[in-house]
Length: 265
Image (cartoon, rainbow, N blue to C red; front, top):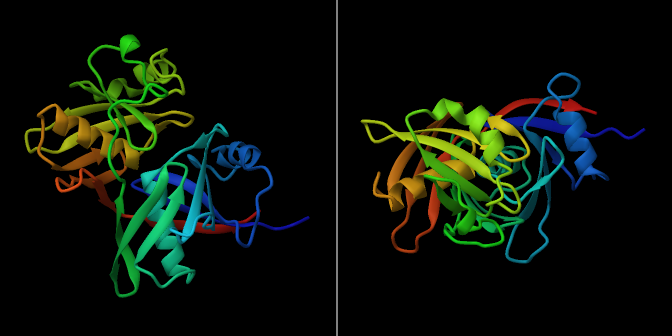
């Protein structure tokens, strides 16, 4: 029986199991994600992240993400930051500017180093997409929301009642307006300009944080005139800083990444 080494990491409480597939290939990641993510019978996580060799010359490494229900995600901002910390602190690269290929394109990771420790990571999430008929059918849209794709689909509802995330988010994830299901955010702009956000992630349910969700929420707040191009998004597990760079409309996300523990399977 083979042994697989894994690392548990989190970004603002959004926790995943990380495996370096360059050393430990995973034959059935869907099955592994379901079994290992179980918080009572497994390791416990929001899903499984596979770190691999780049599949394209313009990138340094690759990332694949499998949600707790086994479905494959297109992108995860929190996981991207964690991979940056993992690659640098585990000695897989000495670069502080890393290009990571994902199912939603190549993302640039800028590592902020203090005393050889990655204290935070800025991810260039590229441009938001406001219209995509494969992900969102406007004619069927639920009321009072804004669709934003950050490589994966999000629907942001501004409301005073962000705690409806469990009851309403579960229903809206599978709404007919979203052919491939959708991540649902409930957001409230506070008096100090911060954005309080709770998220229902497709395939995982309520999570402590969602990097792409924070980006999508900041974009929705900006385009609807609620905030400026820079904002702090306060999620259950922590704060992410988001900037919509006006020169090219790229969304920049900055936040922490943390190791939790290592183990063997």
